[in-house]
Amino acid sequence: MSSFVEIIHISTLVMMIIASFLAVVFKKLLPSIVALSVASLLLSLEFYLLHAPDVAIAEAAIGAGLTMAIFIFAIRGTR
Amino acid sequence: MKEMSRIVRTVTNFVYGFIIIFGFYIIVHGHLTPGGGFQGGAVVGSAFALLLVSYGSLNSKKFLKKDIFSLFENFGLILFIVLGFSGLGITFFYNFLANSGGWFGNTAVIGVNPGNMNTGGVIPLMNIAVGLEVLSAFGVIVLTMASAAEFTKKKENS
Image (cartoon, rainbow over all chains, first blue to last red; front, side):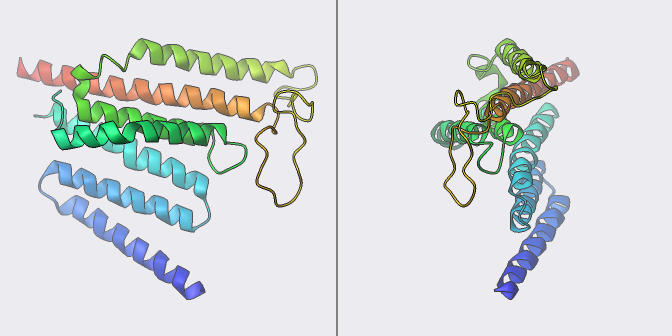
């Protein structure tokens, strides 16, 4: 049982690192923002696995929702 | 700002009501389940951001108005500070409604139970006040960001 939880932790963190790397690598701006949002969503899943559901809800709403909207406004202002 | 494609707008029409209802659920059940005023308000604010992103700032000026958000923000802050000063007979922020039998006044049951909505005293009212303040503050932030991006683009093109 404990090893199962550890496997989920490690796979979540590895997917977070891959998503953050993709956010840096992408040439177009909108897929880069989506990859950053996916990293934030996986961070909220990690908070939930660490028994902090309050922080998980706040991270999912602010990190994955509002910052993505503000970044989209910013890149729409540039073109 | 332009609106996004038809797929995004259709999915937004299906989803945004459920997101807003889920946010109000988190606010109202703040004293029983995880979450509270700030988290529920942030969820409702992200629904407003979704509407604003998918419909564009020019089309969504009809149903998202900055003055109404500002009015609700002031109302939430005034409600919070009035509830704080209402218990001033004993101490500041005294929970004068708990175990009184009236509004939210039932005694909380000790042990494993599904949770009684009618407990908590002044805490659910403060959660509602904080949620109202946070959702309208996020609405004001998102509307200001959208209009600022529009203004910057217009100024650089001219």
